Image (tube, rainbow, N blue to C red; front, side, top):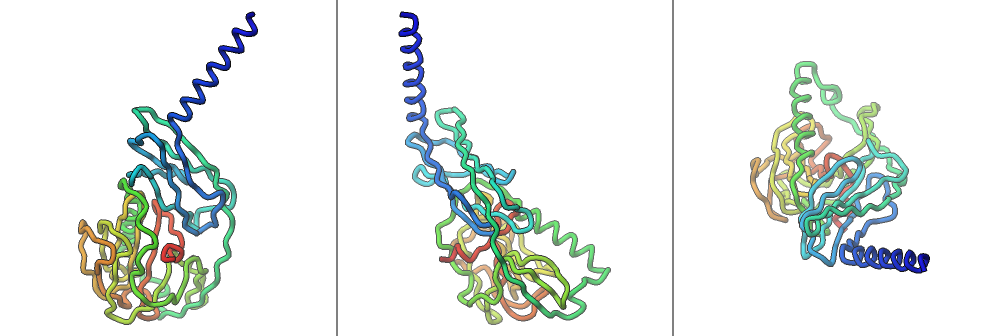
Length: 283
C-alpha cells in the first residue's frame, strides 16, 4: 500500500513538473557549431509572454527586445580572442515575474583566413612619437564605442551594402605592411571611388565620429543588442554623435583618409567589441 502511495506521489510530481515545463516552455534556436570569426543568428521564443531577455555569450551580456514574441541577436567571435572548443550560450528569460534560463552549447571550429601584403609610406607604418598620444586616445575612444550596450534585437537581414563596390580585401587576413605583421583585418574593404555616398547598413544611432590617424574620417553606429557597425577612411562624415539613422540613409562620402593605400570604404561589424566577418550578412 505504501509503495503504491509513493508511486502515485512520484507520478503526480512528474506530471506537475511536466505541465510546468510546458507552461514555461522556451524555444531556443541556435547553431550546434560556428566557425571562429563568422556571424550567426540565435533567438528565443515562448508560448507565454516574455517580459525580458538577457543573453550571455563569451562572458558578455546584452538585453534583447522582442519582435512578435521572438527575441533574436546576431553573434560572432573575434579571431583575436576566440579559441576552438565548446562555448555556452545562455538565454535568461523573465516570464510572469520568474527568471528561467535556457542554454545551448555551441562548438567553435577553426576557419582559415588568407594573408595580405600591403605597401604604405614609411611614415604611415610606424607612427611618429609625437602622434602616439593622439593615437592612443583615438584607440580608447573606439574601444569605448564598440562596448556600447543598449537593448535591441537583430536587424533586418541581409544588411544593406554601404557602397556597391566589390571587395578589395576580406575579413581575417593576416596583414603585412611593408613586410611587417601588423595583425588581422577586422572587417572588409569595399572599392569606392572618391565621393561615393556611404549608406547605413541598418537603422541605429551614431555613437562616435572622428578623424583618426589610422581610420581617417570615421563613424560608429549602434544597432542595439550589442551590435555595432564601423565605417572608415571616408572623405566626409555627414552625421553627428547622437543622430538616429535609417537603413540606407547617407552617412558620408567615401575617401582615402587615414592609413590607406587608395580610396575605399572599410566596413566592420562587432558584437560587444568582438569583430566578426560582415560579408555573410549581405547575402
